[in-house]
Length: 241
Image (cartoon, rainbow, N blue to C red; front, side):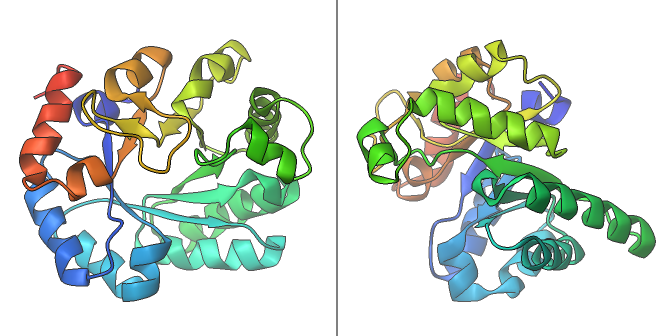
């Protein structure tokens, strides 16, 4: 597990619409959190400005837009994200190895040429809202676990830095020999929290035991009456803080 993840394994999902609310959460929680995840909701509401504001607070940004398009489009979007200063971002592995590899190579080229840190690229496998029945409706007729491993191997071959998957697939991915990758897991809940609309969830302690490097947590913290206390409770559950 990376040193930073040992100290602060939490990634906070800023799934809010108001820029002011997001920055308030950053100010309150930056000592407990490794990265703040900016996803579709917040990025659509606030645009690139929110990334700059989070960075100004001395925090790190994980841009989770799950880029999935033709290789040139994804590559250029990723370069712009790198220029903004994000430290991690997601691509959807279903976009294919050519898309992922071209994005990695181009990011490295531009970061070296222009002098900014090259962001880590994480490949999303199967969303945690998808269960085996839903997978069938997508036209994928083999086991969900098998699809996750296949996509993860494709991402590794394309040079991705890590994988985003349900915590339920962590052990299988480790057993598949996918070494040298960061494993980032959404679908994390406190032992006392509900699953919301996530289908394949796990507690923070369980996910770390299964081999997660970073835990993505959103509503259990952001919708708590006391987000700081909620984060500290979660960290105590995994014996940190």
